[in-house]
Length: 511
Image 1 (spheres, rainbow, N blue to C red):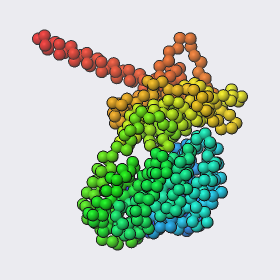
Image 2: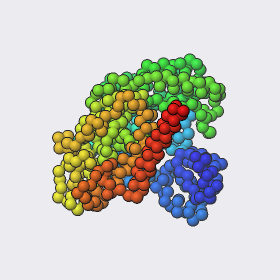
Image 3: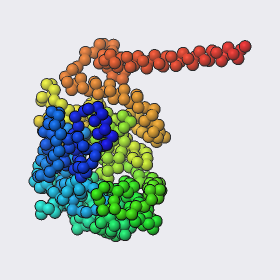
Image 4: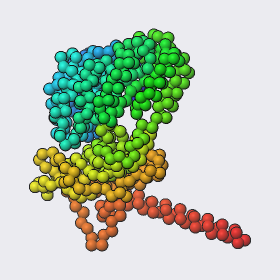
C-alpha cells in the first residue's frame, strides 16, 4: 500500500485510499495529503472521488449505519457474488488490528440478505460467498443466528443446483452451539461442504495469550463433528507461527495438530506486531526462530497428499473461472476441491459431471463427461421464439428464454471429445503452462472473437471451398493474420537454419 501511495504521489495523481488500514491507522504518515474512505463509508466513494478530482483532500472515517447491500458494483468475476452478512466482530484478539477498523459486530437483517440473494441469482450469479470477519457471530446483535440465515438463503437457491453457496470464515466459539444445524446446511446439495475455521495455535497457553476464547479441545470438537456429520467435508485453517511467548513445546503441539488432521488447506503466517495491539507490547520470539518454525510447518503441510484416492472418481463440479495458464477452466467439487478441465469458455458459469484423470498437490485434473446447467447466451433477433436447449459444441449454452433456462442432463447433450478434454497424467502443471500458453491464448482469442461476432448478430459469408483452420479464416483480423504469418516465417527460418547447419557439418566431414 505504501509503495502504491508513493508512486501516485510522485506521479501527482489524485489518490483515494479505502479499507481497513486507513480506518484503523488513520495517523499513518503515508496517508498524509491523500483522501481516505473508511470501511463504513464505502457508499460515499463517488462523492469522495469527485471532491478529490477537484483538488480537495477528504477524510471520511466517522462510523455510520451499514452500507446498503444493493450498491452498484462491477464484479471481478461475474459468476461470483461476495455477500457481506455482517461487519466487525465480537472478539478481542490481542494481535488483531481488524477490530480497530471494523469495530463491533453489525449484522444485516435476514430479509435484506435474502433479498440480495434473489437479486444476484436473477443476475446469473453461480456462486454466492458469504463474507464476514466471523460468520459464526452473525445476528447476535439483532436477535438472529447463523442457522436461521443459512436456512433462509438455501430456500432461495435454484433446486437444479445451478447456484452454490459457500459459507465464510468462522471462529470456533460461535458455532459450537450450532454445529448440528450448520452440518445440516453443509450437507445440502447447493452448499459447498467446506468451512474455514482458524485454530491459530495447537497450544492452549498460546490461545489464551491470543485471547481467542476457545481451547484446542473445542476446536477439535468443531472439526470432528463436521467431519462425522458431513460426507466429504473439507476444513481449512490458519496458523500463526512465533506468537510472543511461544515455546518449542507450544509449537510442537501445533505441528502435531496439523499432522493429525492433515488439513487440505492451511494458511501459515509469521507473527507480525500490529501497532496499537496488545500483542505488539509482548516480548517477541526471535525472528530467526519464527522463520524456522514457519518453514518447518510449511514443509510438514506440503508433505500431505490430500487428493490421493480421487483419481477415477466421477464428480460434479461448478466452473467459474479460467486458470492462470489460459488453457484450463477452474471448477470446484462440492467439497470445494479445485478441478482443472479443458473445454470452451462457454462452460464458464456451468456445472458439469467430470471424471478425475489425475491428481496434483494443490488441485486435480478432470475430463468433462456431461454438461449440466449452462449459461443463457444473449438474445438475437432470430432467437425470439427459441426455447430448446442448443446442442452445438460451439456454445454449450441454453438458447435464451424470458425465464432463466435450466437444462436437464438429458436435454443438453453436447459433450467434449476425449481428445479435447483429457489431461495427460504425465504432463505436470508447470510443463503445461510453459509449453501451451501461447497457443492456448491464440486459440481462446480466436474462439472469443468468433463467438462475439455471433452474439452481435454478425454472420460471415462462406465461400464454397473455404478452409477452416483455427476458426473461419474470413473472420480473422489484420493482427491475427500477421501473428499467424509471423509464426510461419519463424518456423521456416528455424528449418532453414537447421538445414544449413546440416550441410556445413556434412561438408566439414567430407573435407
